[in-house]
Length: 133
Image (cartoon, rainbow, N blue to C red; front, side):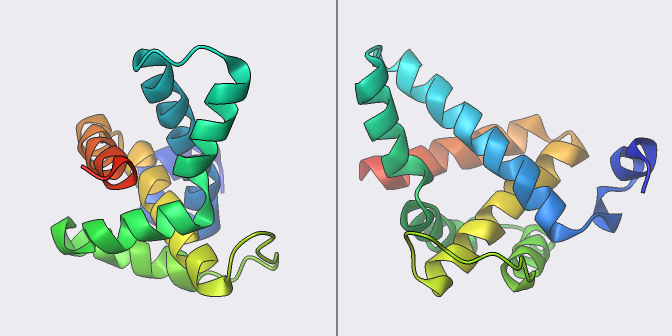
């Protein structure tokens, strides 16, 4: 699949490609969020970021946000959750790992769709879940 095909119709991409992109996008948003909150010490940033990006945290975010997702987004989540990655979870159980992959797939899919506003909405909700708000 050529780059132009992928950006023209992201629905054609493998859900693991969405998750790959979504992982990077989410990590970037988390890092920016933490810096904007005033965290500036590298060790503190790293430890705090891990609270947001762990498979367990992402699974919790997804399960909390699921009722707020559109039908299309739920379809993306299901495809991401069911994708067979061939890798194993290092520090998470398989269910959390699959849900985390599904969350990342959703973020990557939205990114490829150019839906920055929806990503921002989901990020705000995700941060509230992690921060217990």
